Image (cartoon, rainbow, N blue to C red; front, side, top):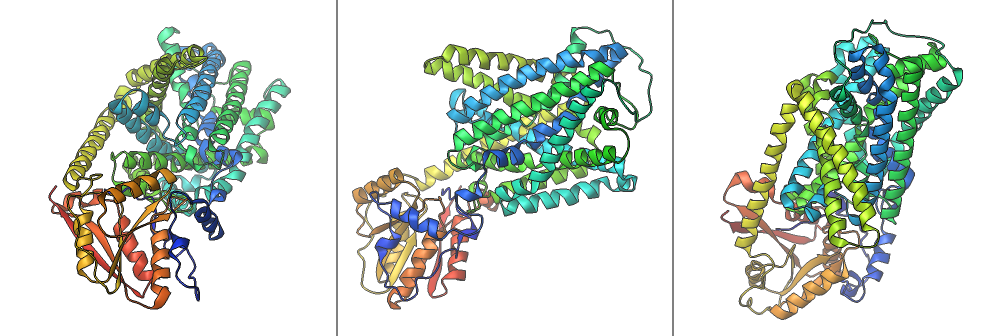
Length: 638
């Protein structure tokens, strides 16, 4: 099956060569000359195309890190809520627990910088597990990340809506409607382009970071709180302060680390040099998050800040630092907006993960389709649909989602750390022992956090994750099994037996082919039967692929010429549309485009096929009206 990465938006992006004779050398890029094709491609860039549409380090911090950064609004509070069950004085232990979490954060930052270097195509823990542990563990990592990303969207939107309702009580009856409206806006922005979403988030992210730093710096400088908010509640210690309670506080506070992996998952979205930019972004995220977490924990310890009715601990610290007037209200709105927009992290990371799964034939191929902005539009829509369904199911109530939160991401953390230990042990390059020690330490800590989360949150809803993740793994396995059956029936990659009939004079018949396989002999035979000159057309994005295609074609030698079109941006629709348009305008002769379409006798499997052929046919009909576009069904029985 084809794994086309082009999208429907790329059709018609080129300009007609009016008045210029048709020259195939301008459209065909051989194995020896792709650079000219790249230069021509750059000249035709539209808004949102090319490297400029990708992320800088600062834009990456904004687009992919708001989830992790905004977690300071609930991470330290989650620690305090557990510790206060042992009495008011136990809340002071928030600082040492936070320091341990900050140490784990440092380990994770170092680890994910290594993941970025080892797996520059993105995928994070999925890529590590697939390559270094095995495909089954890779599917577990992918399922864990999908669960975490969808929950991140739902939790962020629900928490943001609740925070806004605290400042504007009239919104309280409309929490679900508010979250769905914001989800719709985020989806539209991300469909327009990831760099555009970064620009939209730049201001609220900057304001949030500055607000938290002001609260920490001013609060520590004042020496004591200047104002209080909320209704004081006398704490009643009903649990003994022991190892288990400390572990519960640690695992609850680890929710502050969700989102740390998003940068490693979204490396392909960065500008060149992608690896260096992504690693720099990961380091900036770790430093900012550690400073904010430790600063808030210091204030909680110094002032013995206890949970109160109607307000968060962060709101208490804000009032203690800058008072309870309009600056407090403004800060509350900024925090609420940041929590809401933190959902954008999933829109940046999950579509890339879904595209990798699609290329590995674990999900339908349509998730690998990408426009030139670049946007994995089907992945963005899938994130939005799943989050909307989850929000409707829980009526946008944050407390119903929190027991599920963080389990998926810590499963991914543990798998990625373990995978890197195996990677360094197998590679044994210079300094491998130190790297393996760092990753092994991280694996132990995250495994402990995962186990404690599952045990302590199982009855509160964590059992749902235990059910959903195996179902996702089963889905991945079934889809891969079906694609393998298709490949065997179509004999993808095999040289066809026999040769098609020799060409006859007449019209020009162009046959776009997605992949080299045994079925193309029959397709070319049909094309030759139409009469005229028959030419096969394929698209290649790199020199190695071009050479491999040319070598296979020459070995087969079907008597039909093959033209290989260069596509530096990996688009597979636009180059063919431009080529057909130039051919049609060359000398006025009739041009027929024969597009093969895979069709199954079983309708329930049709959604598994990519839409390359259908998108190509539609683009040709729209942008090359002089060409006759014919769809040739290739029937399969599976």
